Structures are given as C-alpha cells and as structure tokens.
Length: 69
Image (cartoon, rainbow, N blue to C red; front, side, top):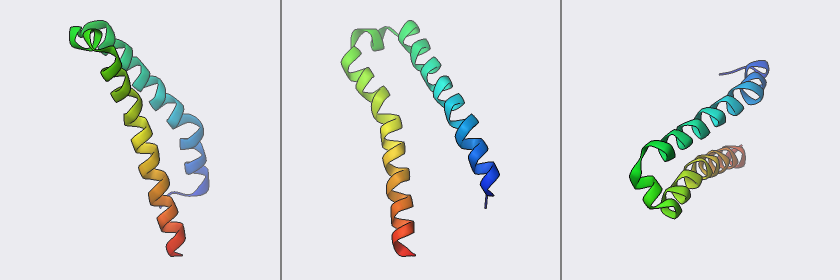
C-alpha cells in the first residue's frame, strides 16, 4: 500500500502529467485521423466520457470501500 507522501506526490505531479499526455494524444488523433475530423461530436463525446468514466468508477469504488468500513 502507498504511504501518504507517495499518494500526495502522485496527486500533485502524476495526475496533471497524465492529463497533459491524454490531451496531447487527443490533439494528435484529431490532427491525423480523417474519421475523427469527420465525426467531431461523437469523437469529442468519447474523448470526454473516458476520463469521466474512470473518475466515476474510482469515486464509486472508494465510496463503497469507505461504506464497508
């Protein structure tokens, strides 16, 4: 299990860097893929729903774990 300092370092450094990489991948995909440029609403919705789904899953899992205790 991670100690408190490692969790804080991941929160402060890791999550923003992962977000930047994700945005960079999205911009690269938009610039290079004709399918994404042809269907901007669908690709944008998918691009938004992936991190939202991960956040919701993490939140619900943590809430369920806290509720069990």
